[in-house]
Length: 99
Image 1 (tube, one colour):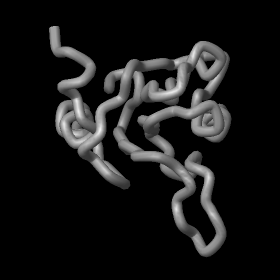
Image 2 (cartoon, rainbow, N blue to C red; image 1 turned 90 degrees about the horizontal axis):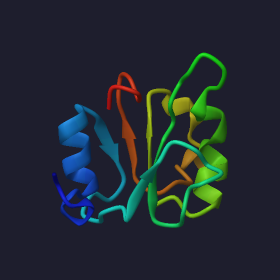
Image 3 (cartoon, helix red, strand yellow; image 1 turned 120 degrees about the horizontal axis):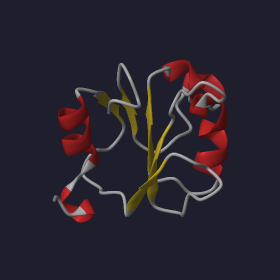
């Protein structure tokens, strides 16, 4: 099993087949698919399920201190003025559940 600290955002993007936006050298302290249980420093996966779409909670996860987010819909990332991304590192993948 890989240690969380060994998985930088660059490595996470490579392993998941995703595209990284933002700095890639840092590592998340943990992982979460639920913004209610997310701890600051966790990587948030926006899982799409039969009842909820985690992309709806991406801004909340970032506000709670997510170290980064994994999404399949880059449009779910909140934008700052002038179109600049307002988020920590973002990994865009085809399928967040598979990632």
